[in-house]
Length: 69
Picture 1 (cartoon, rainbow, N blue to C red):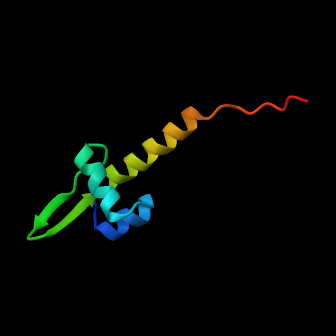
Picture 2: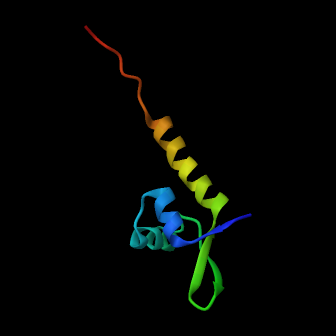
């Protein structure tokens, strides 16, 4: 298991800090792990699973495009 800091979470997701914390508050993004003091990190595999779920949502929502000539 690997813990990653906010900068890497932002890079992996393309989201900003505020959005990440808002999604965590809503329960739709993996929670951070307190490391002590004000330091937190995320479990890399949980963030990867979240990204893969977004991709799966996109793919299931795609409608085939047929050329109607």
